[in-house]
Image 1 (cartoon, rainbow, N blue to C red):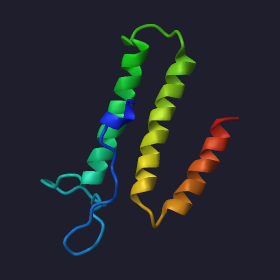
Image 2 (cartoon, rainbow, N blue to C red):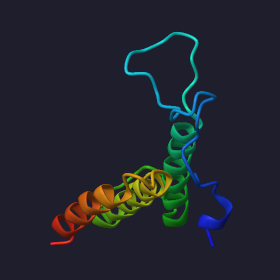
Image 3 (cartoon, rainbow, N blue to C red):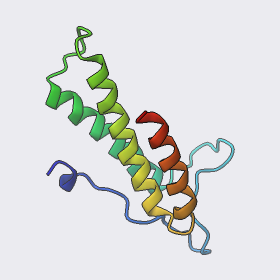
Image 4 (cartoon, rainbow, N blue to C red):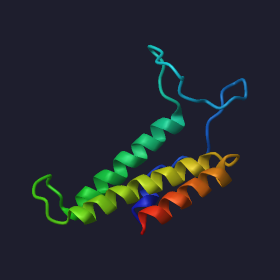
Length: 107
């Protein structure tokens, strides 16, 4: 399927000291983003792009706005799920948070 060709992050990367490679709290010139962050951004961008391509969305018109919003929401849900899957230690908490949001959004 579509997801099989997209590189989804499998786990958070670790630095040589054993700590998770996280984006610095403050901007640091010359530092690149962690691999996981880059993978998640790329995944979201690709899922949004594919959703537009499948719809034949040329950026014009407002027909089917609800469908477009649902496609974008689904792309964000899938990306958040990839983030959750990368952090097994926090997975129970993140799944509970995601479930609460999903229930509220599906009403």
